[in-house]
Amino acid sequence: MGTMDDRPMKSSEWVMNDIKKKITQGQLSPGDRLASVVDLALQYSVGRSTVREALSALKAMGMLDIKQGGGTFVKAPPAESQPMHPGQLYQDLWEGRAASLRHVLEVRRVLETGCALLAAGNRTESDLSALSETLQSMEHNLENESLNEQADVRFHQQIAAATHNPLLGELMESLSQKLHDSIKDMRALWFYAERSSSERLLREHYAIYEAIKDGNAKEASARMGLHITKVEQVLDGKVAMHKPL
Image (cartoon, rainbow, N blue to C red; front, side, top):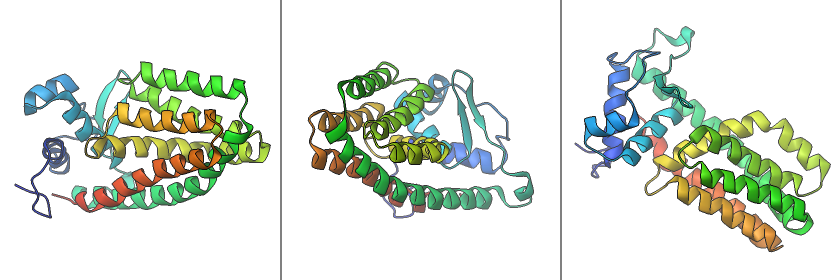
């Protein structure tokens, strides 16, 4: 069995499609709790990282809700859309989510590359300490996705604060909810992308931090831009794969 372009499927794609099929065909209902990552890995005879990639993809599609320490649950689609075929409904939800995320990423590219550039020139030792502390928190909690999401959002807001331009800080604050939502989606897409991992994403953040620490404005802006571009590339490459079974 292959994907639409007939290339061999990754194990995570096979696991994702199987769970997705169970949801769209009603074998798993809204509110149902999935087995643990360990149990799913045993059930599908794959590694835990493979299961996490599959769950992250389904989370990005809006089909699962992953609660910190509380398990993974099937999400209920909007009540007004219940009459739709589940597979088509989730496809429509994903395409709308992808379009919205792309718009947010465009705004983030303009705003955050500028923030990184200014932060490299204006940051203080206190700013660097705050950024370093956030990165250490991310590193020490690689397996805790909820804490990592919070630290990820905090890292980007701290870069805006390090510009010492209050207007930029206000702009980032006004976008805080969209920023948080987009980072959740970005992380899910990152983990779904081939060879992506928490460690690799952490290295990207460290690269941005090092350029800011070195005072290299051009490099800091470029690394922030690359960080966002990679997510856009993953998004563009994965939208076509999220078709109803």
